Structures are given as C-alpha cells and as structure tokens.
Image 1 (tube, one colour):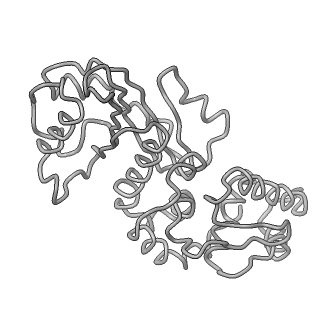
Image 2 (cartoon, rainbow, N blue to C red):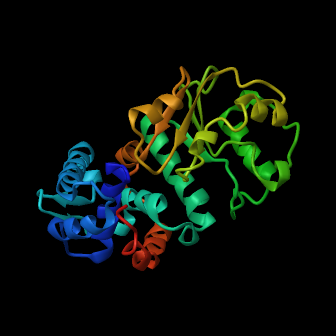
Image 3 (cartoon, rainbow, N blue to C red):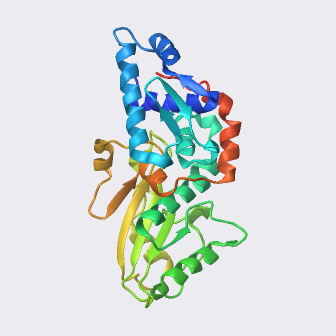
Length: 281
C-alpha cells in the first residue's frame, strides 16, 4: 500500500480535477478495489481524512481545500494559481505531463520566492535555463551576482559550464544598509522528483561557484537550502539536515509563497484530465 501522505495527495488532486465536492464515501469504494488483500479500506480512509485535516490546520489560508471529515472541496476562487496545487501536480502527474518549464523555471522561481520570504533579502534565480530578455548571456547573470555581492570583484570566467549553470538554482543576498561585508548569502537547489531528491542539495560545493567565476571570496556568512514539491517527513528532513542547510518542502514553500504564475495555472488546467486518472495505490 502507498503511504497515507501519497493517498491524501491523490485525493486532493482528484478533488480539484473533478470540481465541486469530492465525497469520501465514493473514495472508499474505489479504495477497496485499489488496496491489496488484508488492507482495511475503512481504516485507511480515516487516516487519509485525518491527514487532510492536519494539512488544513497547518497551512490555513495557503491550503486550497476544505474537509469536514466526509467530503473534500476546493475553497479558493483560483486554485490553479495556488502553489499548493502546483506542487501536487509536480508530485503526482505522470512525467510525460511535466515539462522542463515546470520542473526548472517555474518551480525554482516559486521555491526562490519562498526562501526569500523566509530569509529576507534580494533574490536572483541563477539556475539553467537562465536566459531571458534581461539576461541574454551568462556574463550578464554573473554581473548581477556581483551587483548583489560587490566584494566578489571582477569575473574570471564568463561562460556557463556546458551551457548550464554552476550547480545552484537560486541566490539570496541580505545586506546591511552600509552594503558592506559580511552579508548573509543563501544558495538553493531544487529537486522535483521523488526518486532523485536525495542526490540533490549539494551537487557542487558553493566554493565551485565563487572560485571559478569571481576574483575574490564573498567574505560573508553563507547557508544553503533544498526545495522539493512533496511533503517531507522527519526522516527525509534529517537526511538533508546540517548546520548550514535548510529544507523547504511543500508546506514550507506554500507558507512563504502561496501563489504561482499564470503559466503554472495554464499548465495545471491542461493537465486536469490526467489528474483524474492518478491512482490511489
């Protein structure tokens, strides 16, 4: 049997995809067919309801669903613009429905905004694909970093490694008003896959970024974070815990960045038929 958290995710995604009110009695009937021999659908259903109501309590207004113990329904006017639903889609939809646009640009942006909401400071997305109208070259991006951390000095290199990035997806810098070191610097990684997140979070050491591209050290206090779209339990968080690392899972991202972009909303709407077929087990 799948974990209770996964089944609760599937119930939420199905409730959104169906629209209206999702009756948990009907869910139990389907659960009987999905569970293996010896599993008690009634007990599982109650655990799922408890999980959903706990999420409701933790996230408050950032949670787009409501459950009275018998039904689950969407309670916000624009659910497709909620980060919670975006993270649900990244966690549950078949890989063929999740384009690189959602895995990289959109998720990294919302994770960066969540980290900025938590840490404060100024945020800059530095992961690939980084090219935009404002940032046509990697050199332009690196100069943006120098603007935030002036004591890095001149650039040593200006080309992206293999056309990609320097191993990090987001940069946040919080300075004192005198705009001098030491600053508070945050580097972030993002992982959208449930199967590969353990390999993320320190793909390259921070020193690779500083010593490869800049003439001087940053001379500041630095910490890192890993962001994932699913809910991390205590064991998962411990696997990524260190004195200088923070984790942002679905709860923590939604707490500090509850809204996503119109591009995300359009992607979710196009994925609605696939969401109806997400299995419970």
